[in-house]
Amino acid sequence: MSPDTALLARDLHTGPVEPGAPLIGSATGRALHVMSYNIRYHSTTTRPGDPDHWPDRAPLLRRLLALEQPTLLGVQEALFHQLGAVHRALPPGYGMVGYGRAGGSKGEYSPIFYDARRLELLEWDQFWLSDAPELIGSATWGNTVPRIVTWARFLDRGTGEDLVLINTHFDHDSETARERSAHVVVDLVHSFRPHTPTLVVGDFNADARSSAPYSTLVDSGVLVDTWETAEDRLTPPWGTFPDYGRAVRGEERIDWVLASPEVRVLQGAINPAGFDGRWPSDHTPVQALVVPAGG
Image 1 (spheres, rainbow, N blue to C red):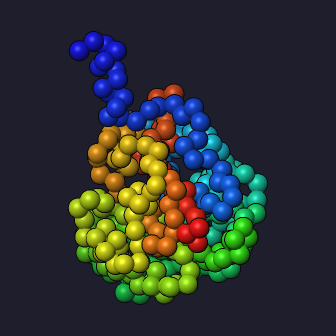
Image 2 (image 1 turned 120 degrees about the horizontal axis):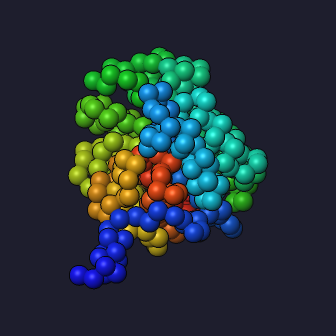
């Protein structure tokens, strides 16, 4: 195999490093650009130059988000002081809902950022994935850390219709917790049916192809996987947890954008972008361009 052929073979199986243009970018018309992104919490044990060093990663995150400009962004693992980096990367006029899983500004957030020029916030809530969902910090399903759901209902000024976004981060260790969490999310989606198009984003810590949580969600009849239903897939099926390396085709998809069946999915993407050989997070963003009313 020649060097050029070897390079081509490599690039067919691993993601590109430098984005020359946004995969989806700012949405126009009736479409909404939805993104799920685990930005990886700020670890205090890293040093400059480490792949996980937040002060090095933050500028890369801002570059990626400024390029893509999602209308709706569900973030996972953000600590309070990391929220500013996300907010500053987005255009003026964005709002945010959510608070820390340990209460107030403490612990990891699963916040929702939204373009308030396009979307009017009508209501929102946050609860814990446990037997005591209103109890701050509760964890009763075998998970050793609290897990949360943040949801918001919006009026789309562009269409005059309501829509809901649900953002979550399932447990990394307990399969029981993940399965029970999936049932809770299905019940929550049912509560908005049949009149309100609903989107669910998150880090589910479970493979899209072979896990009980995924089956529970997509076999429920109220959700579909936008990667599977997209009219146009803009990228190969990269794995979504490359852990500060190049994304690899066919690896596990543990981050998803789901939608109620009436939502039209124009485009789907798994974004492997890095900058100068570095990556903003250990996860890739997952993106979808959708028309909630199906038009």
